[in-house]
Length: 295
Picture 1 (cartoon, rainbow, N blue to C red):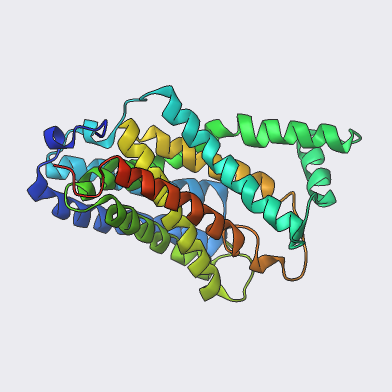
Picture 2: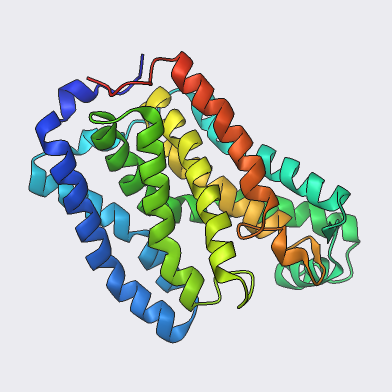
């Protein structure tokens, strides 16, 4: 049985209207940050502002619909779920990049990454091994604090609000798919109109791969949200993905001319590997009784 007491927090008749209100508010709130990102480029502060739009939309939706904020899942929950949320992105990221490196789709260690990381951390003249270890500790460990603060903004909406709303109406599979698709569509302007992609070629293909990745992640994150009763599992998972997969594994890989087709969030391998993980959690969800809507 799920750890989240949906029947005590959510009036089933209000769930779909709440989803509609949330989508509308998220779109409205995102207009400002998106305008700045499209005009000024991928500036860190504008990205942070965009990432908090779903969270603000979720909070206002709760206010407008008369839901208590506890529906969002603020409690921390059992530590094992947070540990799983932290470790899973690292695991599927390592599996994906091990395949990429072994298949020759990209090189194992990019010298440019070592030089830039060394300069950024003030480690010029240090050995490659020392720079690599310290960069993993800083970019993957210490940076998690900042990344969780950003990821929380999104996850208050995607997993905090939408999971309890949609699970009152739909099965685990439908809920996970809807949230993953909405999540991907929300990123579409970034992919098609900014440099948040693998380059200005095959953007439709890149968006398809990215959508498969986010839908697959949605299955895993929805399961963790339901089992833990905590939106923090989603925030930790999201932050760990960004820290280890995007900021470490991808930039430390040496890219070849055709690497864009295989590596990163827009290539083929990572979405495929994550989909395999998602299939496992889909099976676990069925075994745990999430096949039907929660009453």
